[in-house]
Image (cartoon, rainbow, N blue to C red; front, side, top):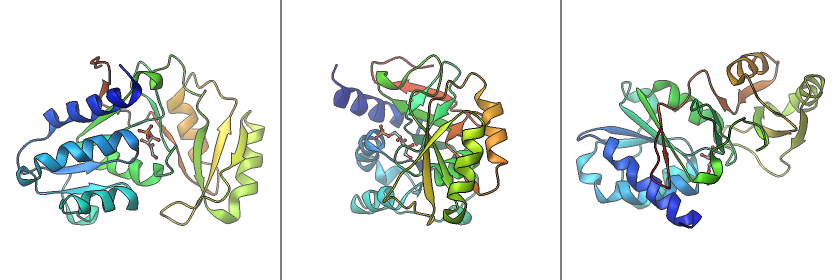
Length: 214
Ligand code: 5RP
């Protein structure tokens, strides 16, 4: 099965988690795009969506799905999003598309986090994909030095600004054997907005494009 077919299959499989009259959390990326297409087919059954990026909000609106303010909704049932890497314990690296902060907020509010990936994303140890870290712009060099001291090789994602007006460092050279600890420690570096590790709040279920789920 080619990768696009896997992304579509994973995106469509996530529909089974959507209940009638639900507010649906929607992530960002090329796999989520297939989920949004599928969601559009059942849009009359849902009450709307909360979205992790301006890009996804635009797609949802194009499909006639109402985008709601997260502050105006109660904790909702399901959040569907992709990932850049996923280990066997459903810990994730996210942020390849730069939406990690809003993604982490929506994941925190959702009762269930359904992650949709193709087989390339499944790994034993996180870190081959460079770990995105969102930083306040004036803290970029300070945070980069702090990360270097901790063994990472940060690369500034030049020319990219997040929806929150911040910048991203992509950190190479990691083998993340204790993701929850690294997430907690790096979150403490002054100037870091969000570390793109989802280990303290991992996915609840991972749907892989080849039909596996765990
Ligand atoms: C965006 C993300 C995406 O979920 C991640 O980059 C996966 O994207 P894709 O489905 O296009 O491979 O974290 O910030």
